[in-house]
Length: 401
Image (cartoon, rainbow, N blue to C red):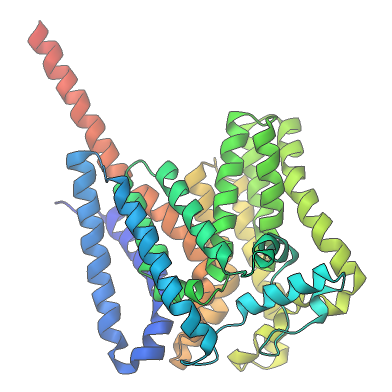
């Protein structure tokens, strides 16, 4: 099988994203043996992508739906086993990401300011108002972590629609959740870092799909409301709106584009501004400089970076106005913009210190970048099949003569 430079580049990107999602957990539990797991991961991803490519060429990428049911059942089983262990703190203090949503939801239900409370580990609440509101139905059901299972099921359905081949859909699901120790750890302990990046990515894609199909349809408005909540789930997603606006202006009339763009923006601002204006100093999702204490950087360096990196990320997102946007390019630019915020600081410093615990913050950008890379990776089989069909048609035409 011939490997092109393009395929090699896509593989390296997928592997780099998987590396940042996994190496922290490898080093945490396996220490010096982590290098072998990292190398094994490269081999496994390469083999799996090669198999997926061949299945795409030979069988059109078909895969029985039972494999996806088995995938969901396996992740569900891991959750049912590992979640109680994480809650018992036998293996360590665990994560307070689920706790912060539960605390904030409890505050809301008692008509109290959600960001005045602290998590079970004494930390401030970093989740945005959108994440708090989206988690509220599951808090009322008894466990915020139930949302992880729901969004996993939505992700499976989304992948089956997004990708041309089911083999590619399965590759994405394996790399992003089940085969990614960092994401899987966040998932089974009830955290929402991996899940919020997934529902934002799905929200963007479906919002743009519905705009292309019918910008005045009720489905588009409903998705727009959801996207508004999703975008204010973490402050990092503030870099996404310019990219959305660029796509809408390129693919529709100006009036329709501005009207559609206003829907998620009004929702996001409508749920965020009241909480911010009520107590600007106590609105903890914006207290980003405190989140950088682990880097050891002096305040005179850390504080400017909190401004510089988001500005650079916004500039990356604005490149969408300079190129003709497709769905694939939206995913690529969104992933690069999100990575601009986190990786230059957290990723580089962590690798320099020989500690990769906080590399999992790159979970957010990698969801977009892996989706873009696999979308490009499956296009070669599609083109090959198209050429085969064309050649077969030409042969049959000549034979008919």
